[in-house]
Length: 305
Image (tube, rainbow, N blue to C red; front, side, top):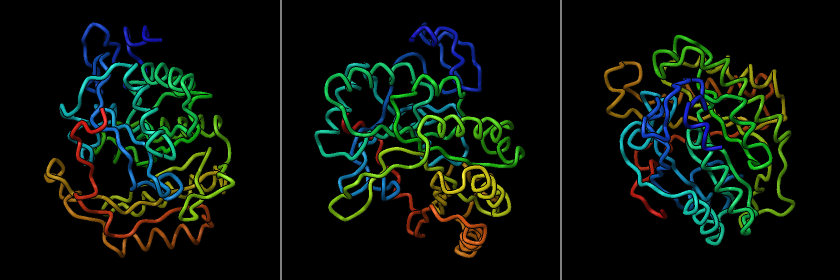
């Protein structure tokens, strides 16, 4: 499977670089596996984080490269440490031993071949908790099929409806058709949500299988967000969960874009929530305003690696 990286077309960027020889693709990464943090994470949706936390591995690099990314230091800069595939399998097992409810792979697209190997190894050695694939959704369905049977929960974003917005903020004018095809493949693999029969210690039902689509409301973009929610509800109904997020945090790298240089207002977020209620979205999550703080961004300090 590693041979895929010799002419890398894992994602829609289709770089065709030889990452095994040290060339970096648009994701910024070669064939060397780089991660920035592995730890219990408590800021995901309640059915993911539960009481014990989600066993989150943050991978370095990103094939999408949103200008406002809150994980900018690892997605588009050099933060991270080299680890082997064997070490990644050990990390999965260590997080399980710490009581993680699941293994949460954050921005994993460009490392799919290595992750598949590590998951197979860890499962052979006793990894039994669900695997979460946490992505910006700029994915090829063919690449996602390599994960079929290994991933239990997909946690994709659906960021934009407008090609103009996706071109300006993520240099990806084809984002919506690519991302919706990817989410369709994710849903094909997992089907409708399945929860543990027993809740955690705080009586929070824990997701065992299914899809939660996240949508981050951007400042001034309620209209685009409404189109996203309508698409998701019309396409999947109550067979997925939709997480409507207000946590947009203006960071320095986006300060030159005036409309991104502020937070989402409570009025904007309330309008979107009311719309979701009006069109019949029932399986969903909302955020409190306090989520839009830089303090909620993890320290990418190599912990757990």
